[in-house]
Image: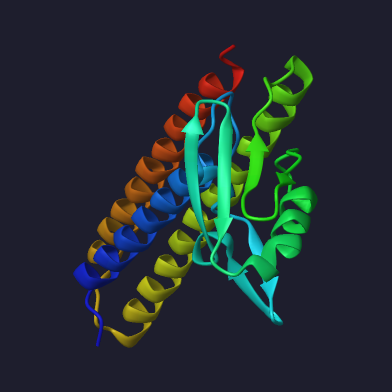
Length: 187
């Protein structure tokens, strides 16, 4: 039977994972410079299976405005190009038969604003996830009270702790968002 302490710990762990996931997602959003993390969200239909690009190719950053992708299987080159073109990155790949080159153009003001919207959307998704974890924890807390495992004073303290965790983790996501927005808008 889960105790109040275990319930709060579980909520904290899950909320922290949501913050870390947000951080990772933000790294995949394009700024003015090349980063292999840009391609982390790209998945390729590889023989009928959705496979992350980084499992199918070596991604490197030979210069600040260029990514190169070297597929392990040259036969997957067309699918990789197609997946990059269909992504929200707005990049145009070119290949020489062995390597796909991905030039990273300077972002226009309009494109920067679009990227900020993408980042805000990602932040909101992760804040919703944190609030869902809170709702989940509150429901489990109610179950403990209904079974008589926890008194009303403990329930109140537990609710306060879970709410504080929610506020802290939401604030962390907001901080990440603020930094990423500044990075995207930086010329």
